[in-house]
Image (cartoon, rainbow, N blue to C red; front, side, top):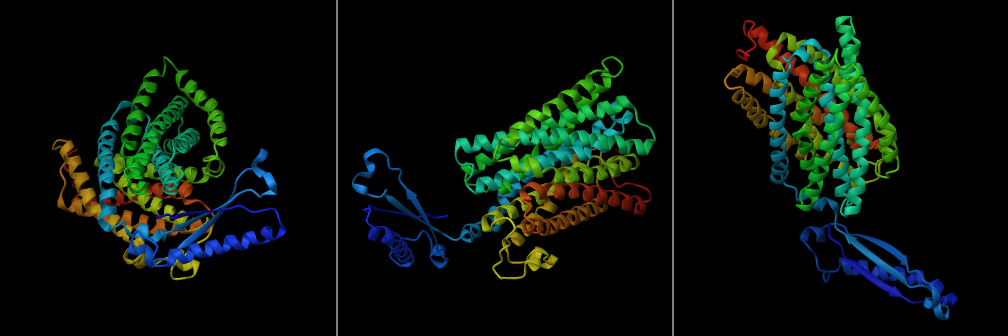
Length: 519
C-alpha cells in the first residue's frame, strides 16, 4: 500500500465570515489534492496504481490550545491530513503462484515431518500398558490433537489478520495481543480438555459397559496437563512466527498455521504418553495425585478468565468463541471412536492417522486464514463485496468448478494447495517407511488408494471452507474465531473415515492382506 501525506495548516480569526468559510476552504484544498493525485505530475510508485482508483481519506485534527495559545480570539489551528491509498487488489496481485507455493510449502513440509514423527510415536505408544489397559486414551487422542490444532490454528489465523491490518507493528501492540491470546487459549484448553476427557470416558463406558473411577481421573488429569502445557508452548511459537514473518515481509497467513501445527502433534502425544504413564503408575500408591491436578486446573480457570476479559483483544472471543471449539471437540471425538475400532482391526492404521489428518487440517487452515484476512480488508463484518455485483448467495454458494478452476485469488490459492497434496503425502509416507527401518512395506495399490483418500479429503475441505467462511461472514460471525475449529475437526473425521475405508478396501481386494506388510 502506498501513502501520500499532505498537511495544510490554516489560522482563522474569530469573525463569523471566517467560521462559515473554513469548511469550504478545507473542501477546496481536498479537491485540489485529488486533482493533483490524478494528474500526470504526481509521482506514481507503479503503473498499477495509476490504473486503479484512488481513495482519499480526510482527517481533521484540532490542536489543543491552552494559556496564551488562543490570543487575539484566534481559533485553534486545523490540520488537514490527506492519505491516498492504492487499490488493495494491487498488493494481492503481486502474490504469484510461485510466491504462494514457496511460502506455504516449506512450513508445510516442516509441519508434515512433525506429523510423521507423531505417527511413529502413536504407533509405538499404542502398545504401552497404559494404552492397552485404558483404551479410552485412544479415543481421546484425535479429540486432543484436534483441540490443540483448533486452538493454535485459530490463534494463528486471528493474529495473522491483526498483523496484516497493522495492529501488531509496535511492541506495545504485540505484548497486549500475545498476552491476551495466550490467557484466552489457556482458558479454552482447560475447559474443552476437561470436556473432551469426559466424552472419552462416556464413549469408553458405552463400548465396555463399565467405567472405573481411577481411569476417569487419569484421563481427565492427563488431558488437562497435556493441553495446558502444549497450548502455552505452541502459542508462543505461533506468535513469534507471525512477528518474524512481518519482519521478513512474508504473508503470515501462508506460514503461521503450518508452523503452529509443526510441533503440535508430536508435543501433545509425547506429553499425553508421559503424563498418563506417570499417573497410571501412581494408581494404588498416590491416588490423590490425579484429583489434585484436576482441582488445581479448575481453580485456575477464574484467573485466566479475568485476564482475558480485561484484554480488549480477547474479550469478544471469550464470550462467543466457545461454540466452535466445543463443536469441533465433539466431531473429533467421533473420529476417535472410529480410530479406536480400526486400530484393533488394522494395526498399521495408527501410524498414518496423524499424517492424513494433519495435512488436510494444515492446508485448509491456510486457505481459511487467507480468505478471512481478505474479507477483513474488503469490508465490515456482515457485508459481502463482489467485483461482478452478483447476488450474495451466488458469492457464497459457488460451484466446485468455480472454486477450483475460477480466476479469483482464492481459486488460485486452492489450486496451489491442491498441487501440494500428492508430493507432500508421497514424501511423508515413504519417510514413515524409512523411519520404521524396513518393518513396513508399501504396495503400489496401497499408495494409490491412500493418495485417492488424501486428495478427496483436501478437495472437500477446501471447497467447504470457502462456503463456510463466506456464510459466517454474512451472518456477522468472525471466521478467524469460528471457521478453523470446524474445518480441522471435519478434516479429522473425514481423514480417519477415508483411511478406514481405504484399509477395508485393501483388506477385501488383497485376499485379507492390509498391503502394509508385517508391522
